[in-house]
Length: 181
Ligand code: PRP
Image (cartoon, rainbow, N blue to C red; front, side):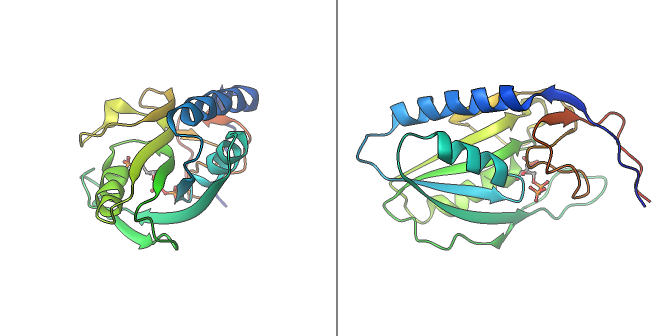
């Protein structure tokens, strides 16, 4: 069995909720009251953030899910992510806000935005709970960011290491990375 290392807390549950509420206020202010927001969460990691953000927004919003898979080599961090689960709903003419847990190299979000913009949404913006700009390999403008972090391996609040730790209510650091057997 793989060992289960205890992460070191980086952002407490209270701090995350407070920041999500601030992001919701910012987002609300940017969209006209009559516009109907469509939240597109990127699986799997984005699901916890989506739930809290949706409940913090003071407006009705529809939701949908998309999943991207990265295929790369062990030695090369460049890859072309592929969509393995598409949105269920049409987004043409809609105000779409893509909800990501973390932006690292930026390749996932960049590819996703490319594909979604081809469908001619009325607007297409992004909200990422965590941003790691030091790892960026592609140019990407994020509309809303929760926290900017260093090149650290983070888990919890939806984020995993080998599918573990997603359930944690806080975001923690794994240092050093646990051994998997
Ligand atoms: C994570 C995260 C982003 C992506 C960011 O997903 O949720 O979608 O990586 O990486 P990038 O900016 O370098 O492209 P991951 O592939 O770990 O899948 P998961 O959310 O299902 O765990």
